[in-house]
Amino acid sequence: MTHGPGISGLIMEEPLLWEKGKQGRTAFSMPDQDVPEATVEIDKNLLGDGPDFPDLSEVDVVRHYTRLSGWNFGIDTGMYPLGSCTMKYNPKINEKMAATPGIATSHPLLADELSQGTLQIMFELQTFLASLTGMDAVSLQPAAGAQGEMAGMLMFAAWFRKKGEKRTKILIPDTAHGTNPASAALCGFKPVLLQSGSDGTLDAKSVAELMDEETVGIMLTNPNTLGLFEQSIREITAIVHERGGLVYGDGANMNAVMGIVDFKRCGIDIMHLNLHKTFSTPHGGGGPGAGPICVVDELADFLPIPRVIKSGDKYHLQYDCPDSIGRLHAFFGNYGVLVKAYSYILSMGAENLQKASQLAVLNANYIRESLRDVLHLAYDKPCMHECVFSDKKQQEYKITTLDMAKRLIDHGYHPPTIYFPLVVPGAIMIEPTETENKDDLDQFIDVFKDIIQEARENGELLRQAPTRTKLRRLDETQAARKPCLTG
Ligand SMILES: *Cc1c(COP(=O)(O)O)cnc(C)c1O
Image (cartoon, rainbow, N blue to C red; front, side):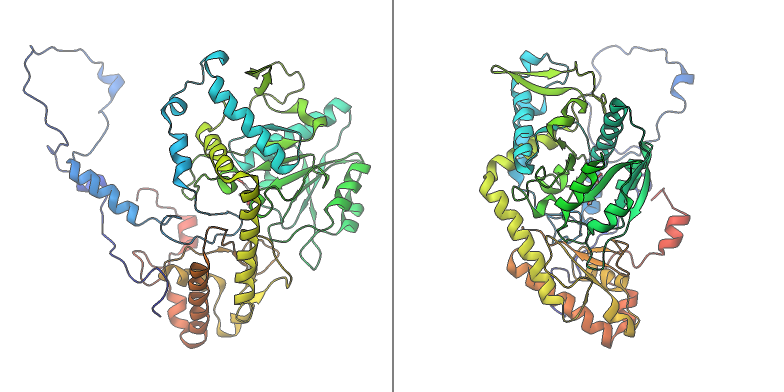
């Protein structure tokens, strides 16, 4: 095999800084002292033995971190087809905008009249997100998708408390992301499993069977985590509303439908967006994110505080909202992430955001069609932004999804999402995103086909993969049971 971005690479060894340091090494030279020496009394009990920092020269430090960075994989290195995560390329101009000195250094304790620019960015971003989703009001407070879900669940609870109703259960589909039942349970709701139909989508009949007076409503994801559009969404939300319930929409898969689906018309009451997935914040390393929630008018009073409002031509933070679920954290969330989203939306424009979603869907369907002869397709119908295969066809060679995913690493690709969603045994979920061009998609497809050929001819090699990396296949059970946290 010759194609694929990864062939072997120059991988440098690198010890821990503590092993590398030598006493007396330093990264700077102080001039000779030209003032009298002073002694300061320091309470030894307060300091203990002092921090154990290694002594290093500047070049030691620079090489250390540069070498470590080479062990990492990111979207700037290559294709990262991790399904449900939208690992698309995020234009550098948006980073630059977030680092603009007036924005990056503005202090969150400044009075409103001295923060008009930063408040205007927040206010306008809220307006953009409302118009992209079709919803009425937005809070930028939540710092992640999961925190948006939790805010939504607290709002569900506040809504029913105000109405004087006691409801304790919530419907959650079997394809849901794990954070959905976790967020609901954190807010005191008991998740009730809603099975998806044989075509991978929800069936209005099963919602009708489970939706009762003790149930607050439903949390659903559209497109769902199988990359399929929930066609019966309006029927489902109508049933939930008829029985006094509310509908939470997990908008993590927004990259498939930016400005295309009107979620309010679909019957969604509250939804979150993941700015770090859809709106230009890199998130491979688990850095800061933002999970704004978008709601219908009827629920706006319950949004977290502070809310950014505009009166006349001035922007203000509003704290006086008696029905609000309160604050989610200090200040205004991860502000830099909001600026990147704002800059991304402005630089794309409404039309190009729609086009980006259409290309994301086209790319996923191109991969689905190109690999369908060699990999088993979990659901044989057009997909949205991601497609789900399984290892069913490779079972006769005793090759698993894990083997194929590990072999992709040898060829310079981050593996796709595997073994999720749980409803597909041996799932391989590929989300190419709109930022891969056709040449890159073809290269990925060729590499995947070669790996499948290898499964037939040289299974042993696949079972040992990755073979070209610094570390070989890890004992994952051992790693989970006995984690080594010192390096
Ligand atoms: C990523 C994701 C979440 C959680 O979002 P975080 O920002 O990681 O907390 C929730 N639901 C789905 C479908 C997701 O893909």
